[in-house]
Length: 116
Length: 115
Image (cartoon, chains in turn brown, blue):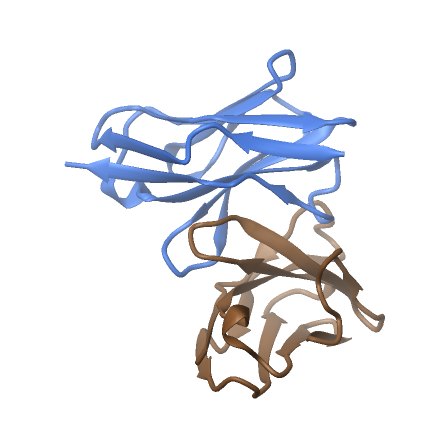
């Protein structure tokens, strides 16, 4: 139980285009989802927290107009990187917290974004 | 406020020898502590967690960690390393009972296992 998936697992796009990444909780309802960014050989940095049906809460320094987060259902959250640039290239990881297991986050496998 | 310091960015051991990955934390409240493992281009897998029960916590794949409040440490150990243990390990802290909330990650320790 408590499986989180991400799609796509990797994506390459041209500079200036937008990319959408999906995060799904497969066998539980995720009341809260988290989006992290990880640069090569570095730790995970929390970008934003989203609660189902509410606007996401962004961490300091994260542009909300650049990284659009939608959490429209209890099993799906999306991160859209708008007008992507090469500096947005990174590994994006989501995690989800359910109603029954409030003390743990379950992580997705990550999405590798490369912007040319 | 909370923070985590992983004292070694790289650790190299021989297969079959013990593993020690060090983690110190700082927290203004009682902490929950976690160790996660990440294999290349993969997401994070929870190894073990401390949530104020037993101070010696046993996890998956033979790993364990001991919470030492007096030393503000939560070091990860394994008696005998296996090649498949080679990965990145993250120590994580959050307020007690708040593992589903904001996590603070250490900078990671890359474990290399040699034949």
